[in-house]
Image 1 (cartoon, rainbow, N blue to C red):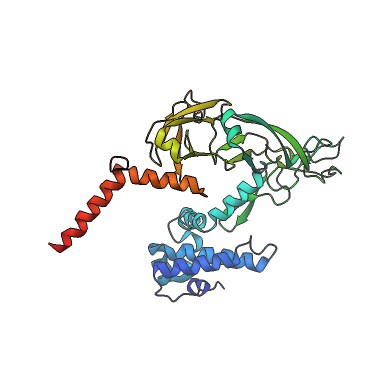
Image 2 (cartoon, helix red, strand yellow):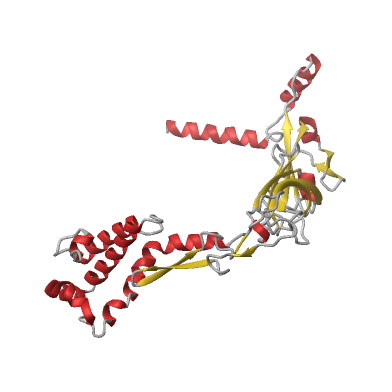
Length: 374
């Protein structure tokens, strides 16, 4: 005698649609054959749960069941010719909602033998980023086994068609009034099995080795630039396609230059006398030349001088940034007696015209202070 559909789902007769669905999802996950392989009792319960939910989730079928019980669905009693209950389109949507991601993940995992992508971190100098370079690197990675040419089978033998799925990589299992297709557990979706595996790679079709690669670093690369070497990643499993290798570049800090995009900045200390009297100095640039910087008389601390076209090249563009020289006026230290006397004499001879910014500031500060007395 068939169990009551409400009892099968563990709900009261007056349960609403939401209660039915929650109860069904919980029980379907608990008794699903994939979670209970080889358990005949779990498979039977799973079928009963499906049948009960299919009948009760449809208002018309549920009304018929409440009135006539199981007799409503016997001998084609509902929907004529038995066609109504046998059509599982509505339940298929629910099943996909519950198990779709799980089955999809298995399908992808079984069929995709692509090797993993690899990452290599490389540090380059600012000079190398300016000029570009060809770097030689060594990368430990999975490579195609040279003994079996990636097949995974011992030389002289070949993989054979999987006996479980007949080479399709998929198997179909009947679950009551519907069937489930899933990845073949014997060949993991490849459609072939290896009866005599290669001794060198143990049937994997790949081995781990260190290999040398040549990497072209273009001129103008910035910190964080990523270079992709297609097909240079990990070899695929049993002849599958190789992944990619990604080179992540970082710039070493430079002793003299700071970079901002295509522009370079350099802070140069100059003496107080050079700033006051004027002069010149030379700065080495990344192109291997020297640039002469003229300092006009009365140059102030922090003033910038722009050297056009002396910056960094722009990646893959026919453009070059600028170099900005910022001067830092250095105050004399460790003065001799004579030097101090000369500076004191200079101070006595100085006027507001010699230090207009200083004089102007303190005059404004004096006016500000006196405004409080009014």
